[in-house]
Amino acid sequence: MSLKAETAALLRAAHELMYLGSDGTPVYSNDLSRLNSEVYQLTTALYDSCIQGGTVDEQAEVCLALLMGYNASFIDHGEKREHVQE
Image 1 (cartoon, rainbow, N blue to C red):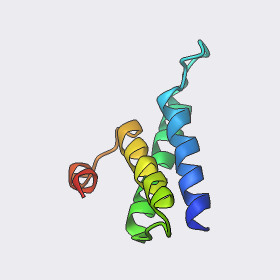
Image 2 (image 1 turned 120 degrees about the horizontal axis):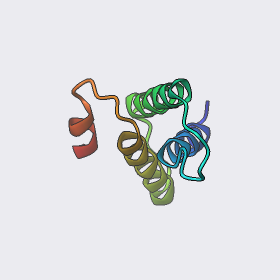
Image 3 (image 1 turned 180 degrees about the vertical axis):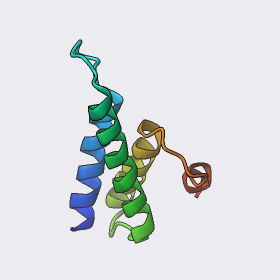
Image 4 (image 1 turned 90 degrees about the vertical axis):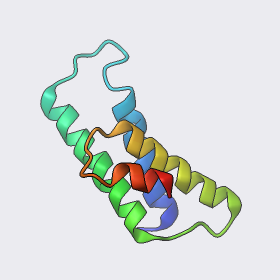
């Protein structure tokens, strides 16, 4: 998957998780759990890829996606704070 595709997938999933149920629809635990896991996995994969954008705009989009992913997901195996600081 390309950097642009990875970033877009994470942005989409993080946005969906952050606003889950805000439109008045019920939030089911299995949907919340699945989406939370997806955001965490996408965030971890993008962070671990160590790929930086070719332009300042691409790098900013990667940083935004990572920050949104870490903010939206409530899974933390102790690395979240360190990754956000980097």
